[in-house]
Image 1 (cartoon, rainbow, N blue to C red):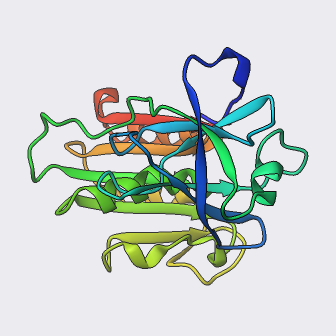
Image 2 (cartoon, rainbow, N blue to C red; image 1 turned 180 degrees about the vertical axis):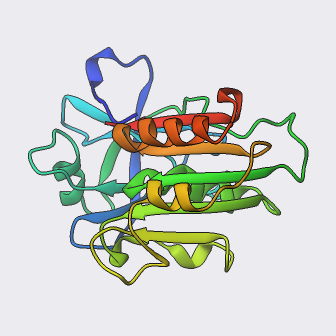
Length: 226
């Protein structure tokens, strides 16, 4: 997850109108995009890029399956090939969007009361936002690791007590420290399905912690942001 991809290598791309832009921090924003006929499953991603560029980037879909639009959560990366251009787009403009793909989804064969722990760093919270908005009555706990509390993107969406903000550079979160430290201090059990999305270092560390806690790799699902 997170690779820049040349548009020329795409099989199917299309131009979608930008319906709205919502800024969450100085560098992070939500792009609301015309959905057209694109259907997706929560957890999938789309490749998005500027209309006249040669690159797109993979973004997990932020919106719910049933919404009449697509949303992606974008963090501007200095000297990035795509995100600086996306920050400059205007409402009424267009972006390139490829059809949704990916397998970072909820297994439909699991019981309705299955317990989940979603573990995210930064904008890796995107697929979990889509999970929670798309699927009612999910039995989940969401651990969100960020530097500062102002990166708690749209945290009011999550049910009280189910969202844990772990802040490493201020004390305004629910837990002062990295999400990996919280996981070491709070065990959730071996019958839980764990979904991890974020930077590769966090994911590798969480894998090690969960394996030490006796969790089977069959119960660990990961989507990596580079």
